[in-house]
Length: 431
Image (cartoon, rainbow, N blue to C red):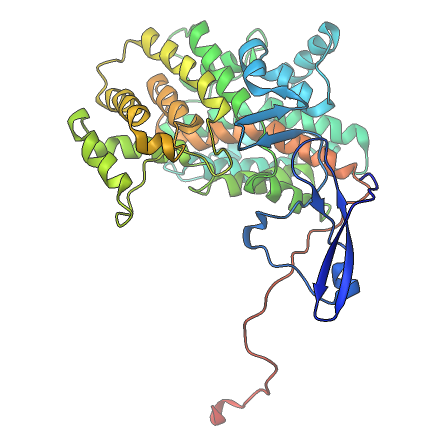
C-alpha cells in the first residue's frame, strides 16, 4: 500500500492519535487502523465489516452510487457485450486482456481439464437421491483435494496455476452432474469440441437416448450469466474464501468454503427468491396488491429482484441481462408462461411507479437471471449452483491475489464482548 501524507486524528479522552489515510485509485479514502490497538488499546466496532477494508485488491471495483462495476478497469457492460466468459476469466486471473495466442492457449487448457477423475463418480453416488445440488457441490469440490494431490501446495506457483485451471474447468462438470444426479438422469461427459457455456448446457440437458444440439442464443445467454456473476469485489463468499485461504488451506477447501457461504439465501439465493415471489403473486391482476404491500412499512413483504445492497442506482449488470432475457423468451416462445407474464408486467409497473424511482429500486441482475434460467428449463434448485460455477473464477482470482500479498495475515476479527466476567466454578451440588 502506498505511503501517504494525509492523516486522521482520533481523540480519546485527553489523548490524540494520528492514523494514516490511504487514497485508492478509485473509491473513498481509507483510514489505516492497524496500529490503533497497539497505540490506544481500543478496537473498532463494525458488524458485517460494511465500513472496513480487509485487503488491497486490483481485481474489481464497484461504485454503488454511479451503478458502476469494473473488472481490472473494464466496465462490465463492455465485457458482457463484446467479450466472453473465458476471456473475462483470463482478465480476472492475469490482470490484462489476452492476446489471440494467449486466449487460445488458455481455452485449450480449460477445455482439456473438464473431465473429473472417474472415481469421483462413486463420490456423487454416495449422496441421497434427493440431495440438493449445492450440498453435492460443497462436498465434491472439497473432495477434489483428495483426488488432485499435485495441485494443493499453495507455496508452489505452478501448483497454484494448475489448481486454478482445474477449478474453472471442472466446475461446470460438477454442477451439471449435481443436476443430473438430482433429477435421476445419467451423467453426460464433457466434449472438447464445444465452448464453455455450450458444454455446460449439453451436460445438463443431453440424454443418451438422443442427440442434443445447443442453440447458440441459449449458449450466449448462459455465457453472459457466467460473465455477469464472475466477480463482485469483497462480498460474503469472496471474503469467506479469503478468510479460509489466510490459514493456508488448500485451494479446493477454500473454494468449497465459498460455495457453502454462497448457499445462504441472503447471498446466492436471490434469483431463486425472486422466482418464488413471482409464484406467490401468481397472476398479473394481483400485481397492484403486492406493489402496495411493498410500499407498506408495516408489511414484511419485499419485492425480490429490485434494488441492491451495493448499487444505489441501476445495477449495471441488469441491462445486459434484460437483453438476454428478451432474446431467450422470444426464442423459446414461452410468453404464455404465467410466471414470466407476471415478471414482465411487474417490471413494467414498478418502473412506472414514482415510489420505486424515488427509492432507486430498479430491477437487478437476479430478477432477469432467474427468468432466463427458468425459461431454459433449470429448476430453482440449480440457480445457486450456476452462480457458484460463475463465481469460481472470482474466488480463485482473489485467492491468488491474497497469496501474493506480502501484507497477508491470518484472519482474526475482534469482538465487543458482552458476556459474564470471570467467576468461580461451583460444584454441581452447590448450584
